[in-house]
Structures are given as structure tokens and as C-alpha cells.
Length: 439
Image (cartoon, rainbow, N blue to C red; front, side, top):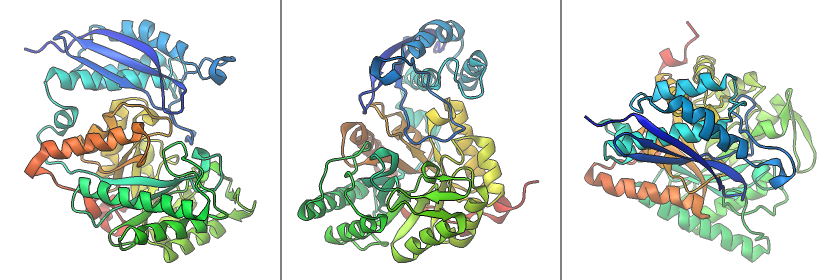
């Protein structure tokens, strides 16, 4: 019998895609299998998510993680050695209890999530299976529909524009690899358009073009033109997806835009977004309202959820209880899934399962501060999430994840199925029992 007892846990400091310190953890099991994982970090963060432990002080702007690494090598290691990696929930629960805070502030969400992911990787290695196959448990799975950033804004681009991500998805594609082919053409076309206009300024945190536009609408117009120039039909072959990240500029029912400095109440802001949905081929929109505006989410979903996927991120922070409550309130149709937001693999899986039980769509997502770790490529496929959001079609920390999915699709061979348009979830597709009142 394979010995899956945890024998060693070791943390080190490494660097993320923004050149900031983060935590990497190695786990070794009794059978000799090892797992490694790196904690990502977000810029736009919900108030209820697990928090990183940073050192403060002058070094690296206060962002060093020596305390979090020490937590791995001292308290976390001592707690986990001797536990069985075959029981992920017990391992994760031990770390949560050891930390003792609701937001992982004592030991650090970065220390805990990196360890949790490394334990999962080691367990799959003990079976001599790639992680996606281990997670699938023999069930049929699909390659996810990718959401890929073309223009970056909001907190990812010094708030040059208000909307955080201007993305595309390819519902008309027939495979994951074809979706990437199409995206590459649109990305190149968008860059060429910006160069022609003299507005090409480099890339934002997640690899999308750094916006040099006068309005959010100008970006949307340019994105539609890029889709057409690449030879595709907007809305049919290639559609637009937005991450509004409204919590970054909305509070207490008032939304203040950086472009123009205008202020809008909830109903006015919903009307503006609704106008975009009617004008542009937008099939998905994330965090259209602030996390403190649940009634706004409900109104927006009631008005537009039948034809546009409405995603919760900061509003839900990969929390199963919040997901269940929002589903009962008919406040959205899909959920973003981020392991470091939840804090552990177990909590991440529970949030995904709660969403699926309610008939909601699920999108496994990267963070703006990413690394070469490709675990989320395996989570999105092995858990059959249906959708995958990594960032843009540039920068190696992003491309590593897209490329890993290509390898998974290749490994599936004739069994490979692409979620495509079916990966999107609209209100009309959610069973009434899942959308009903809380019991």
C-alpha cells in the first residue's frame, strides 16, 4: 500500500509576476512522492477573502514574506507531519484550526494555501497521475471555455480606465486549442490597431494591453473592431467578457468613475451597463456591482441575466455559504473560483460544489500577481469547471497555464470535449428549484 503520510513540509521565498515576494512550499510523502505549489496574490480583493501575511517595514515596500515562510517551516510543518495526505479535508482543517483566525491572518493565507496545494500535488504524484486525472476520479470532464484579457484596466493598470478586464471568449470554437488560436489573432489585431493610432503603451499586470483611451466605450469599440479585423463575427465566433470589479470604485450604492469623475447611484450605473450589453456583443460580466450592493446584483441579474452571464467574485470570495445565499437570492448566474481567496483546496472545492449544486456556472481563475505554478489549469479541467480565466495572451506566467491546458487536451485525445458556449450559464438555464427561495 502506498504510504501517503506527510513526512516533510518546507517553505521558501520566491517571486511572483509583479516582482513581489511570495511563498513556495514543498511537501514530501512517505512513499517519496513530492508536491510543490506557489501562492499567488491579488490586487483587486474582496473584503472577505483570506489575507496574506506580509512583514511590513521598508523591505520590498513592506511586502516581504519571511514571517509566512517561517510559519510554514515551524508551526505548519510540525502540525502536518504524520497526517495522511489522502485526507485533504483533515489536513486543511488542521491548518485552519492552527491559524485560529477567520481570515488566516495569523499564519498567512499565502502560507496556508501554498501548503494546501502542495499536499494535493503530492497526493496525485503518489498515484503517479497528472493532477487533472487524479481530480477527475474517472468522471467525464470538459476542456474549459477560456476567458482571455485583451485590454487591462482598473487596479491592474493604474486605473487608466475604470473597468478592470476587457476580455474575449470564443463560444464558436470547437476545441480549446482553436479558442487559443482565435484569441491570438484578436490579440494581434488589437495591438496593431493601437499601434496605428499611436496609443500602444505596453502591457498591464495580467498581460493585456495597457489602455490609453478616453472612455470605457472607446475600448469596447476597439475590441469589436479587433474581433472583426481578425476575421471573426462578434457575438457568434468571439464575444466580449467584462470584469467590472465595481468594488474598486463603488461604495454604499454610489459609483465614482475615474474617467470624468462622474458619480452614479446604483440604478444609474445599472442603466449604463445595460446600455453596453445592448450595444456590444457582451456575453459575460463579472462583479457589475460592488460587493456591498447585493440588491443591485439582484436587480442586474433580473434585468440581464437571461442573455448575459453574471459572475460574482469580490461579492462571494470563493465562500460556499455566500455562494449558496447568493444563488437563493437570484443575485447572479456564475461564480469565480480562486484557491487563495478561499484559503485552502478544501474550501475552494466546497465553493465550486455549492455553485454547481445551485445550477450556477463556475470559472476557475488566476490572480493579478501570478507565478509559473499551473495548478489552476488542472483544477479547471479535473473539476470540470467549464470556464477558465487566467489573464491575457502574453507573459509567461499566463501562457504557462494556457499551454498546460493544451497538454491536457492532447492527453485526453479522442475523449477531449470542449465546453464552448455550453460552459456559459444564463439565468434561464438554472433549474427553478436551484433559484428558489431559501428553505
